Length: 226
Ligand SMILES: Nc1ncnc2c1ncn2[C@@H]1O[C@H](COP(=O)(O)OP(=O)(O)O)[C@@H](O)[C@H]1O
Ligand SMILES: [Mg+2]
Image 1 (cartoon, protein in one colour):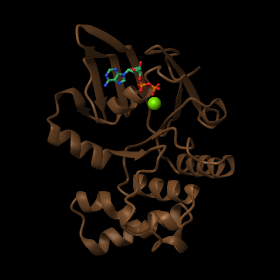
Image 2 (cartoon, rainbow, N blue to C red):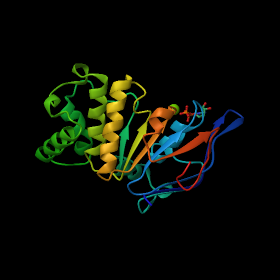
Image 3 (cartoon, rainbow, N blue to C red):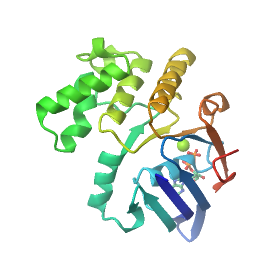
Image 4 (cartoon, rainbow, N blue to C red):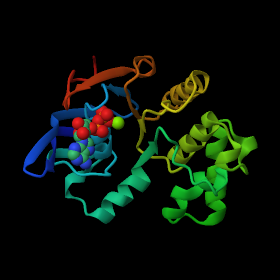
């Protein structure tokens, strides 16, 4: 098991009121699995994604990623887990506009302390994997939305993370580009990647091996099957 969450709760305090956003969530992701979590707007998807991605910490419950107990890590250790063990793909790409595709992809390696020639070599390799070898020197404003998302996917895989985490990865794309991103995920999955994808769109979720549903902060359907 790569990821194991048990009895995760996330509350937000709003003045005197407490909102229970995630309620006793159990989530397992196995090595090599491709899982989609589906739910309507406001159901807690992004909150869950932020916990899985170590961008936020739960109110209660346990979370193990690889062999680490995430709830016991310091801020600095969490930042290292985000850099080394998780590849993020966001709806809005989150590329730096002034950097070329190559430099955007190399950025996590820069933060990870990898030397320059090695960064360039690995970033070029990741761009080749996503089919953008001929766009390495283009900036985001010189690329289409679909190409930007493929650059973002190259950036997500360049550090060889334990898991890819995608929040509405096709949400900002036309359907043809979205389909290309889904083909790319399928190819990465075939070559061994572990993928957790969050979406409200059934036709996107259907690309995963399994779908689990979240509603009002309750994640249903254990054991990886719907
Ligand atoms: N920082 C916050 N403070 C208070 N409530 C929040 C906060 N973040 C999210 N929520 C609430 O949690 C619920 C789930 O939000 P979210 O995880 O963004 O849902 P989704 O991504 O499924 O649309 C919503 O009702 C939202 O208002
Ligand atoms: Mg959301």
